[in-house]
Image (cartoon, rainbow, N blue to C red; front, side, top):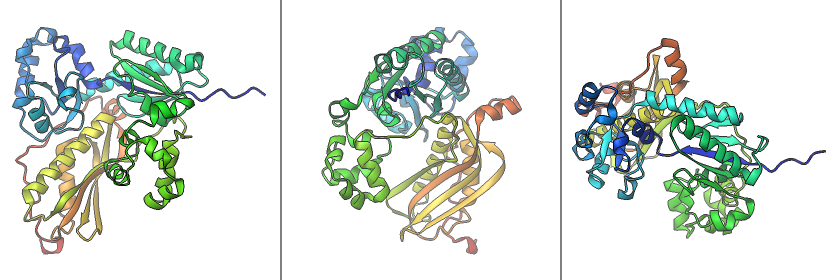
Length: 414
């Protein structure tokens, strides 16, 4: 009986994907701080109208600057030249403008990004057919039984995939190869951009344990803060803790996972087809907020959550029909409301309209600790576009739209 080959799993992450796609259109911006986010403005539309397809002729001075942005949009991607200023994905554009006002700001163009996404993924599938789609710009690939997948522990095949993607698209990617998905995800960050990193079981102490716990996919800010409160700052610190203590402190299931993850153990397979059930965003307030007293602040948060969910849907290539809200009151009780509409959407304005209707069905007379927005009943945007043959364009919420109207009253009193 033939011995099973060592498991070799790769995580491939496109380098600053949205920005890199834009730099193919605007090569004159290479090396400059560049941020992608928000909707097209008059300046962007005027430039397109004036230069048409000759986008490489647009003078650098003609592009919009981040310092001129006003609104509540968030960054989808920033170039590596912008990151030393502290600018990064999911950051509010207004905050980024304070950190790097000279950065050039381009609007998102999700249809273009989805097209490149389909292209690079088709290239991977031609080489390695066991691929798990993890979003518009990243995938897991099972190298184990692919010809060449074991050579140099996967480096040879990773190099071939990098070259094929670059030759076809002029885009670069970074690849981590390891015995499992958990370690491969960490490894893909080691040598960016355009790098290949290999992690073997014997590399755990040298390459993995010095990393901050927050680097591990599955440890969020709250869990990290709790870990740090117990003196656990690195994955090595976490690995040194007793399994039983972790289970008693963090709960049986999560504590068990923390122990296994710190020791680099992960048996999850590469799943070739998996659709998300829903996407959501929520925020816990620093202090309890009241819908009447803190109407403006709650309204701004509500708007931003809707826009962030819309960005997430567009980023991952989905639209949804069921839109809902989640409230946690000061007494920690939770209320949810949801509504299903007759069409799929990933539009922030539409999400806010329907979520606002859900909000009016909830009791807003009590102080709130948390507010969340959720979209379910998802479908792939590419399938929807093919059905109606009309690409979708994200819209953004007008900051002046009324929010939390009649919010001070419980539903039975309106």
